[in-house]
Image (cartoon, rainbow, N blue to C red; front, side, top):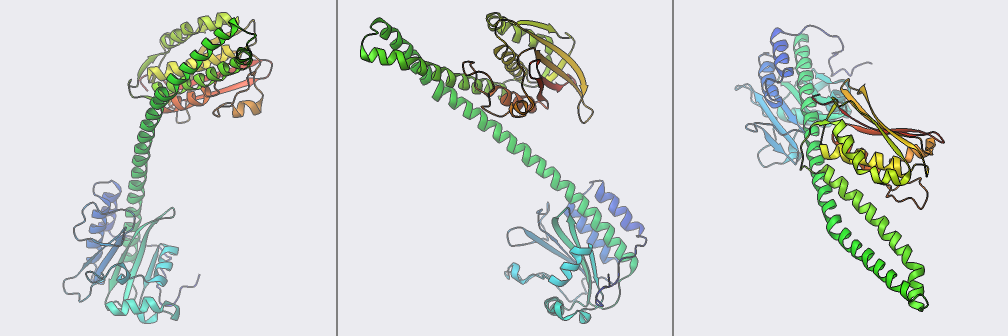
Length: 441
């Protein structure tokens, strides 16, 4: 691409100075802050006799040490360094506001497109760079090299070196500025990622607190009145049964059972919410959970439902295997998986097997999988795809359930760095499992 005559061709690459290489190493190793890296870069650039001043801007980060920086508008910070004998200043006059700052739209466009733009003489600027020429002539600048701190579409700021004289810039100076600009941009990108991660963690903690407050409100505001409504309805049904010929009693006997079923369904939803809320609370801390003990507890809780459904439970869990997780969360998820296997089984007979498997996660982390396998009716591929969505159920209408168990189990498992997944074959059965990091990982 042919460069405009005002711009120096900087497409060729050459060596950098030892001083710039050492400074780049310090910047990349994180020994100094990003704005201190800019301060040291300015000092290095001013060591070249050609440079009369250096100006830098920050558009996303505020400097850790704001002394010497001038704030423009809501987010931009600018600072200049110059030789004491240089009769120029590139900053807006005090109180002038951001509109008085240099914009140089023509040069900025070239600097963004190529990462660096080297102007040899203000007088050679083309007609479509009239604003750039006017701004530079006002400050007395004849030539400059401008770079942008730009990475992956994020504009962190800029660093520019200016001179009162015209002429081409030394190749080694161009390479020094290019290297230091890249080092500063890399540091800023890393810092930006760290801050984004910290903000995400803070947002997650706030969401966790909101969950707990919501679940607490559900327990207080819904469960107690629902239990009362259910209890009174059952009492009224008993009274109506003593005088079934009465028109009011007859209507109650007709519609009352539907009211009871509706209340029981909503109570099931509330109990799922409360169970998940307790599992997500911070009452217990992550620790080595002995999976054989957790499974034994869950199996004990489900002995009566399994016996009533004619389902036999078989457990083959290595007593030495542990998972690094919240104990209450592990038991809650396993209770949901085992409860589903029993509840949605064929009536009258069947088996559920609980086993463990060792595996490696996507990052190579050692994981353990607790599998709950049944020989029930199974799900087809489309049903399995939607099985983890809230309130999605594929059981017969008379089967109790909220449709929340798998969705909330996945949330609890992911909180501990794990997952809940499954596979199923219609007419053969289903396997759903809880994956967690191995204890001590």
